[in-house]
Length: 147
Image (cartoon, rainbow, N blue to C red):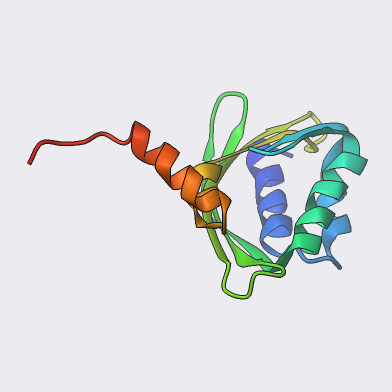
């Protein structure tokens, strides 16, 4: 199995992820998988499963759509969009654009899944209370072009 074959299987499981299909995604992970995103770093299949179980517990109808896959020398890169709604916030819709760096072992299992996405501008600034502070901080770093 090539890395692209493994990536296609992983993409399919990722795009069809529900609480009922979580085992399908976990089955594609190596025992020593490392998963990292802007908020978490976990090791092993149990931690990997907990990441997505937590996502389903805190988000209503989360869904991933993979728009592109690219192969590098040592990893596969998947460009994705995640949509859903934060549980308990009636109008808090999620629309996150990101990229996953995915490494496979010789058996085609995922050994590393690193998510890259901008949590400040895509999530934190949209939340009540913390959003105001986050927007102020982001403005400090924004380039101000002369008119």
